[in-house]
Length: 425
RNA sequence: GGAGGAGUGGCAGAGCUGGUUGAAUGCACUAGUCUUGAAAACUAGCGUGCGUGAAAGCGUACCGGGGGUUCGAAUCCCUCCUCCUCCGCCA
Image (spheres, rainbow, N blue to C red):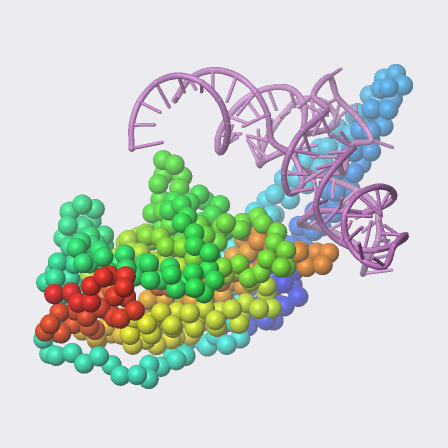
C-alpha cells in the first residue's frame, strides 16, 4: 500500500509507474480520487477535532460545577454538549466512511515499479537480465521427463497423492523424499552461512498477517482457507516470517534483519491446466526455503542484488543451468517494486522453469504491517525483501531430468553429503 | 471442553468507590552536571497515529480488539481475543 503523502508529493512519478503497469488513462483517475478523498478526510478531521475539544472543555466545566453544587448551570451546559455531540456523531460517521473508501482505493493501487523495470504487457516481455553462458546438458533422444523418471525410480507417486488428497499433491518416497530433505537442509545451511536466522513459523496464519504481506485482498483466491477457524494456509513462508515484524518499530542499528525459513507452501492454483501442471511443474503443495530481509531504505536495492548472488550460488552448486529475468511492468506482482525471477532449464521438457522470485517490496508491505524504524525524531517505514532460496519441486524436476543417464540419476556433488548417495538407480 | 483470575507506556508496576490521569513510582534509555576516565549521585528529557502549523507548539484519539452507558471512562456494562491457575481430555 502506498502512503497518501507519497502519492501527493510524487503524483507524476506514481502515474508514470502505473502506466508501466499498463494502467489506462481512465484507470489513472484513481489517483485524483485518492487525493480528493484524503482532502475530505483531513477536512473532516479538523472539524471533528474542534467539536471534540469543545465537548472536552464543557465536560470539565460540568465536573467543576457539580463540585460547587451548581446543578442548574451544569444542566444547561449539558444540553449544549448534547447538541455538539449530535454534530460530532455525524462527522464521525462521515469520517469512517471516507476512511473506508480511501483504504479500499489504496489497497487497489499496486506498488510503483523501480526505474529499472522494463515496460511490457506480459511475462513474454520480461527482460533477460542474465543469460546462461555455460553448456547445456545433452540428453539422448530417449530422455525421460521427470514424471517418468519419478515413476521409473519410484521417487514420487502422483497417483497416491491423488488417492490421498487430490491432483497436485505429490507423495515423495524412498530416495525421492531423501532428495527432498537433502535439498531443504542444503538450502537452510547455505542461508545460515549467509547470515540468516532460521525460523520455523506457523503454517496457518490469521487475516491480519495475510493482509500484511499483501495476499489479501489481491491474492485471496490463491490461498486455502480454513473457514471454521478463520485461518489461511500459507502460500509461502514470506507471510508468517515477514509478519514477525508487524507493528514493530525498529532501531536503525537493527538493520539488516535476515530470516530464513523452510515451509511447505499451499497454493490453490485455480485456473491452471495443461502442460504447465504436469508432474512437479505446478502443484498445490510444495516445499520451499525462503529468505527474508528487512532493510534500511537506502540499502535495500544493494541488498536485493546480494540476494540475487545468494540464489545464484545455490544454483551453481547444484550445477543447474539458469537464467535471470527482470520482470516487466505487466508481470510484476502488485506488492513488488522490482522482481527478478530465476529459471532453471529442464532439459527433457526443453523449457525453463521458474524456481525463484526475488523481490524488493520497498515500503509496500511495511506500510500495510506498520513496520517502521526510528529515524531521528520520527519514524519511517522500513523496506522488506524476500526471495525463494529455493523452491523445491521444480528444482527436483530439473535435477532428475538433467542428470539422467543410462546409469541412473547423478546427484550433484554439493548435495551428496546431504543425500548420502551419489546416484539414483 | 468446564470453573476461576488477569490483560496499563521498552520492562516492572500503581490507578480500577468514573472528573485537569497520556496515565504515579521504579528500572532501562538519552542529554547534561560532577569526575583524569568510569561508576555512583544529581538535573532534565524520554510513546504512537491523525489534524493544524515554517517551526516551537496546539488540538484530538489510543490503558488487549470492538461496541455501549455517561456531560465526562484506564476506571461501569456487553462482546471477542490472548495469557495464567485448577479440573477433564489428548499428544
